[in-house]
Structures are given as structure tokens and as C-alpha cells.
Length: 249
Image 1 (cartoon, one colour):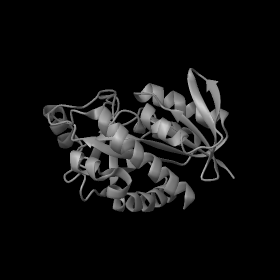
Image 2 (image 1 turned 180 degrees about the vertical axis):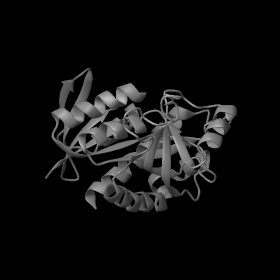
Image 3 (image 1 turned 90 degrees about the vertical axis):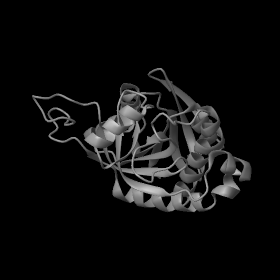
Image 4 (image 1 turned 90 degrees about the horizontal axis):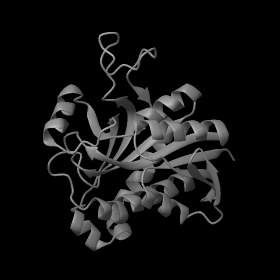
């Protein structure tokens, strides 16, 4: 069957995925470690994306040009921007945009020069499958995560959101900046540092893709203080469970 590429944003997520692969084999390339094997019987290649748009674009390009992949899934965490997007929720990107792209006055703000667009669309079929998987995993969150983690991070009643995700080479963690982003891009559900770059690369190669994010904070002055614990106890488990459910469905 065609190979699926999975880019993980954090070491903990990569480890959680590798733990589900019975036969992973390491292939170094471009300063990265690509792991080839099977997950739920599907041929996959899993890699750490590294942080930021350039690193993510490099990783996506290597996947598209060296590993004969049929589609690409990026999984990681993000800061919530949209109303009602809470810590522990899952966001599926339907469109992605670089919030720090500004080549004005030569081009409109946010438009990628010479592309004639600011937004790149994720694959609808992948998103539909991931949405079903996400809803199943979220419904089972107390059992999957444990009552202590659910209580510690306030994860009761988590939800799935679909819409605009924005990316930029800056970790947004202040109220003033998050409010400025909401004012400039009121449709944005979440902000992160890689997805729109991956989307642009996939557009260039005609590669179907999806971006799945777990909300770790509200991208403001109340950003969660124990980020490593959240990644370890919540986000990595969500990611592994959703990916496994999606591939097995």
C-alpha cells in the first residue's frame, strides 16, 4: 500500500509513535532521522519535524522527494486563539496561513509572493477520516489519559474544531500578541510554528496533507506553565491514539 508520512513536532510524540511500530528502521538524511516501518499494518515513515517554518519545510521536502509518500500528516501542539478553543481540544486545519508573511506593498499582507494566495487547503478526505478518529479518541479521553491527568489539566468535555490554523516563526505566549492576531485574523482557531510551511511544500508537490494540533495553551499570559508534562501526559497520547485510529480505520 502507498506510504504515509507522519511528521511529529515533539520528541515525546515521535517516541509514542515509534512505540507502536514493530519494525522501524532508521534512515538518516539531511541531518534528520527518518524511521521507516509499519503502523497498524500501514507502510509509514515517521520523522521529527524540528521547530519553525524552515525546518518543517525542509523535512516535508525530504519526505516528498526521497520517500515516495502518498500523503503527509503533521501532528503537534498549538496555542488556542478562537473563541471556545480550550486546552486539551483538538484542531484540524482546513486552511493554513503564515501570519508573519508580509511583502506589502508589493503584495497584500499574508499573501505568499508569486502564489496569488495566502491560504493553503488541507486534504478534505484526510480531514474527514482524522475528524472521526479524533472524536472517538476524545470521547475516550478519561480512559486513555487517566482520571488524574484529566483532572490536573482540566480536560473534561474536550472538543474537536475544524478551520483556519496560522503559523509564524515566533512562539506566541502573550495576551497582547494573541489579541493582535485575533484582530488581524478573526477566523483563526489556533497558532503554531510549522503547519503553513508544510502546506506550501505539499502544494508545490501536489501531495495531500493534513495538520492535526492539540491545544496546549491559550497563547496568552495564562499559557500553561507545565508544558513538558502536558506534552508527555496528554498531547503525545492524543497524537498516537488518533494516528493509530485513523490508520486502522
